[in-house]
Length: 374
Image 1: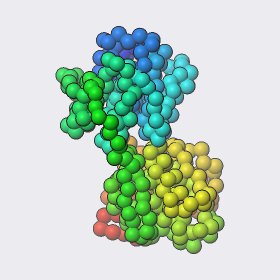
Image 2: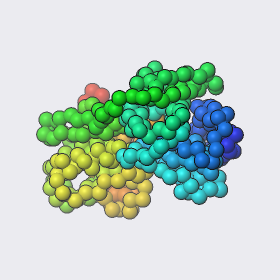
Image 3: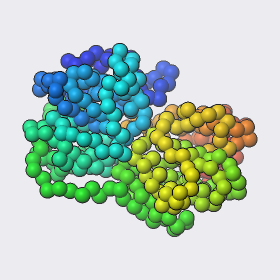
Image 4: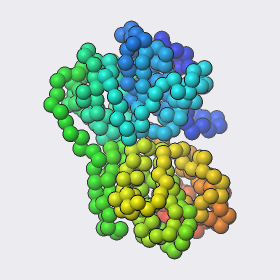
C-alpha cells in the first residue's frame, strides 16, 4: 500500500476493519489536499485544530505532535483506525484525544479540518455545534472527492459559518474554505422523531442515524417476522441503528436479555434513548463497537440483523459477510441468526457456507427474511 506523504508526516496507514489483500487505501487525495493546504498556513505547535470525520486517522495521525489536535466523528471503526495507525507509525495510541459524535467537543479552535460526511444531516449538526467554538481568525476547511461533494455542503457551510471559497480541483478533490462571521444562534433540528403504529412507539433519531426520517423498508419488512416465544434467550441486535428491531422484539419477549451494538455513536445514543422511552429501566446492554467483535464465543441464542451494504462511500458486502461470521462465532450451537436483505444480494448462499441450515422465513418483492441456524 502507498504511504501518505505530506509536509507533516510520512505515514503507513490501514483501514478498519482489516481484511486480507485490502483493495482500498486508508486515505485519498482529499486528505492529501487538505493537509498540504493546511501546511501552507504554517501552523504552530500551539495551533488548536479540530478534525471532523477523519476516515481512519489520516488527518489526525499526520498532525499528532505538530499542532494541538483533537478528533471527532461518528464512527467507532474510524477511532479504532486512528489508534491503530498511531501505533503503526510509532506514536502513542492516545496521542490524539477523540470525542464521539454523541458528545460535545469543546473549543476554541483555530482551524477545523473537515471531511464532508455522506450524511449531510451529520455535517449540519457538526456545523451548528461549532457555534461559540471558533477562535478569532479561525477557518473551517472542508474537503471531499468531487464525486462525493454535494452542492448542499457549501450551502451549509455558508449558512452556519460564513462566506465560502471553493478551491481548484486537485486529483479530483476539492476544498471549501469558510471564513466565520457573526451569526444568530441556531437551535439544532436534531434529533428528529417519527411514530410507529406497530409496535406503537415513537423513535428518536440523532443526525447520523440511517433512515432518520422514517422506518427503512427493509426493517418494515422484517418487523412482522421477528422470532417469538424467546423465553430468557440472550438476543443481540447487530447494527442496531435506532434500536427498533430489539425494542420491538423485547416488547414481545419480556424475559429475554438484549445487547444492542452499532459502529455509529449517534445510532447507539438513539437506541439507548429509545429503549428507555419504550421499556423504562429494563436491563439492556447498548454499546458502540466493531459488530460482535469481542463478544464472548457461544454467548448468544439469537442475533437480529439488517446488515449494511456500504461503508462510508464504498458499496460492497464485506461488512455484511463479516457480521455473519461474527454472529456465527457468538451464537450457541442451535442458536439462530435472523436477517433481512435485498433479494439480489444473494445472502442465502453466503449464509449456507457458514450455518448448518438456512430457511426463508418470509419474502416481499424486494426483500427476503432469512433464518440461519448454527
